[in-house]
Image (cartoon, rainbow, N blue to C red; front, side):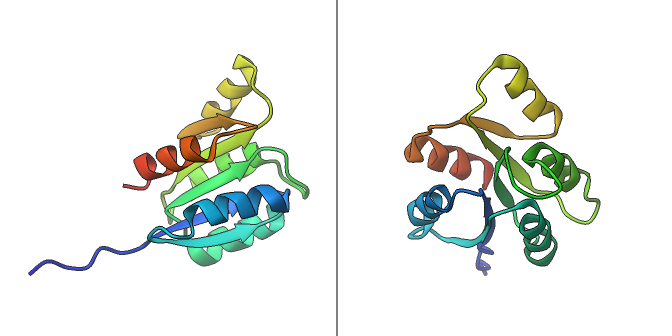
Length: 126
């Protein structure tokens, strides 16, 4: 007997509502449960509540923590392992290196192609 695959949970974190909506609408027709957060506090709360399989995370966020801080925190969470895609307008090699050092599984620079993001999400959410 073949069991039903569990739906993957994706948390979208960006302070720009238009970016969140673009990502949400791009993924909405696919088999993902989608959650959103607009700042670091909401992101932490949603992460703890939903335990997402993947987080799309902007680096520059309002609140006490940056996206890099959250990335490192989420990756160190002993209760849950997830994949993280960082989004940022910062595109210098040193910036990208900091993202991977924080634990990111992928780093996509803004402005980004929704199709490129979707491909990365599909790759990591398997």
